[in-house]
Image (tube, rainbow, N blue to C red; front, side):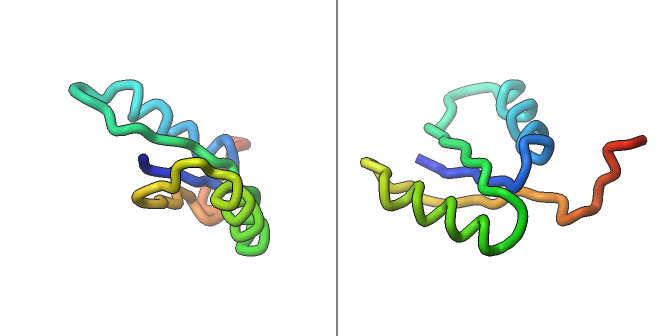
Length: 72
């Protein structure tokens, strides 16, 4: 299983759309919205991992790091 994290739902949308278009077999993936900033990310990831019955093989963090403007 792969855990994909992002700070916001807006950032996770690109991954969700790309995954829906993927052809062939899909590896199990869990998604986690972890909030903005390193403290929020550490907190949410720690809680997720402490409660997980199956630990992920990899964790991938997606994000734009404030490089987007949703007003345009």
